[in-house]
Image (cartoon, rainbow, N blue to C red; front, side, top):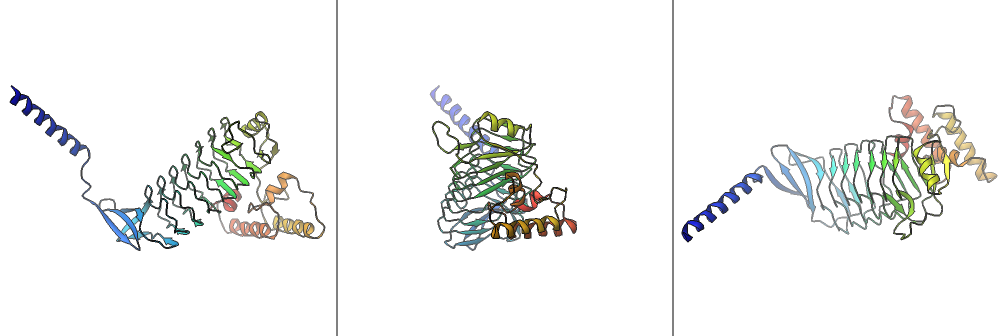
Length: 339
């Protein structure tokens, strides 16, 4: 009897192992490739490769579009996590996804590009990157996740692209140097505690496409136990919008704004006349001091988000005019603030 029971147990165990092996087949088509200290997982069937780790100590890492004949499409989970050597990363226009914690705790990372091919940024992908001052996202990005940019404490401005429909909890949390936070027209929802930040944030620009802003989503200080408001913050948006509702209910100053970036003379076009007007305003400020610009005028003219209206803004407006005149399809918002 005991022998029969033992045989049944062995048979059951063998069957369980067979089921597990069937459910998780060996990836015979996958292989590792190492090039310039970057380790890739390459798949013969798809012809695609993912970055899975970096074993070097160079300050600059350039990821190629292909390696060993495989197209590089993904930065894997934790691929560069806690690397304190890298300062500059160049990604190719083949990358579609950046995985969870891919660049988290890279405290010396100064610069990384977001290629036009990028669709998704994973949870914690850039969390605790203390030196990343410039974050210029690509216009085709469709998804960011919780804590994607949490504690990127050096970034001074951030624009969320129009195809990112929801800003999740803690996605933009603790960005202490942030002065301008902009959501492009197309964003629909900003979740609770999505962007609790430091004292310096002064303007949060929210388009009419945003239909839901949850409680304590933005405008409040990071890790404030009683949800204290950021002292200088103002919300810019259209009259009657969800942005105005949120601002008034949370006692945050509201500035009515038409989102006509670069169109300083309000004629419906962004052209050389606007560039000339911005340059004239800069000269007047430089020689006479002061300004007659309203807060909305200031945001309309400050197309590089440096909190100043100057010759650089005039040059950018002229550049957009040339781009649009030659058939460029991007909106002024996308052209000025996204890659």
